[in-house]
Figure 1: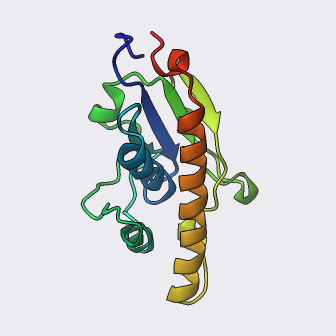
Figure 2 (figure 1 turned 60 degrees about the vertical axis):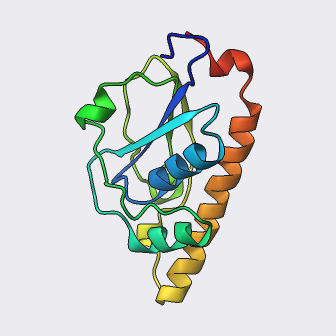
Length: 154
């Protein structure tokens, strides 16, 4: 947990492979709300960064091409305590979101998995844009709704 009331609280976004949704969420928090929240992301297991997601994020000015996919067991991820842990798996596809041990607040936001999209490259990119925009909207609404008490609790 954030121990200093002036410190920026942390959030960990967790999904299955840390290849798409959790990467997008981390990027949006850090780019848009980094002055009051610090984001990290990980997956149940490390996967490969989804190139369609990289393209969709580049369209909105976020270059995540240099990111690496991380597991919840990654030393850097495990070395922190988080004020919030947000799972971003797709319930409708029966994805089992990982449980991450934390004393922080747990939230679940269901988003479709871009790696499951079929169709032409253009169709997959269009659906990935929809997910990207849903994640961005959810991040913006949530971040703004955080009270000073919830952002700086110890």
